[in-house]
Image (cartoon, rainbow, N blue to C red; front, side, top):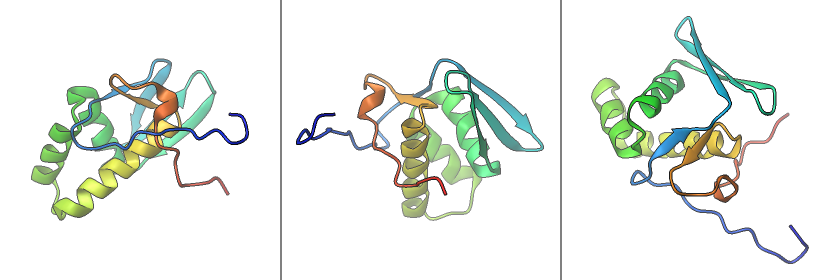
Length: 116
C-alpha cells in the first residue's frame, strides 16, 4: 500500500460463508488440529473447540450453521460464542487459512494478534 492509502476491510458476520483456502492440509491429532499452509510452509494448531469449528466449516461453510451447531453442542452464551467464532474466523482469514465466500482474501480483517 502507498502512504496515505487506506485498506478497506470487510467485517465478518454470521451471514457469511467460509471456505478452506486451497493448499491447506488438515490433520486431527488427539482431538486437536494441525493445519499446514502449503503455500507459506507454516503450521498452525487449534484446540479441541477450534478443531470442532474447523470441522463444521468444512461440512457446512455457513457461519450461521456453525454457530447454531456450536450452541447445541456447547454450554456457552450466544454473545460469547458469536464473538469467539467471528474472532477465530478473522484470525484464520488473516493467516490465509480460510476465505470468505465471494470476498477477496486481502479484504479480510487483519488479525489483532501479533506474534511474540
